[in-house]
Image (cartoon, rainbow, N blue to C red):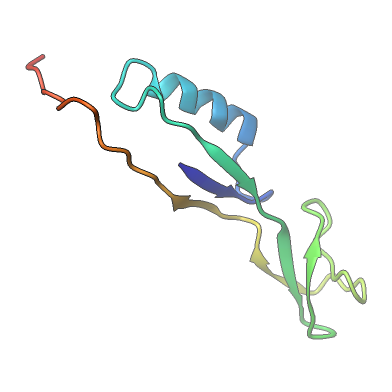
Length: 96
């Protein structure tokens, strides 16, 4: 499984990774792997009309330094890909 996580998403990647390992334990997904791609914060400058990357704690234009910007990316938590592998043996559901 591949996730894209932006610096303004409110998600701490290391904690998400730890929670994923706990959640998959003793399930049919116990061998699942999680890959986290870190995406940059990107802003559109309303002053000079350029799209640039910005620091998560200083959302300003990378070209002219203006603070009048629109966030274009960096607040996402996006599922990018899930690779499914067929089980070697059929999985039989049991009543609980």
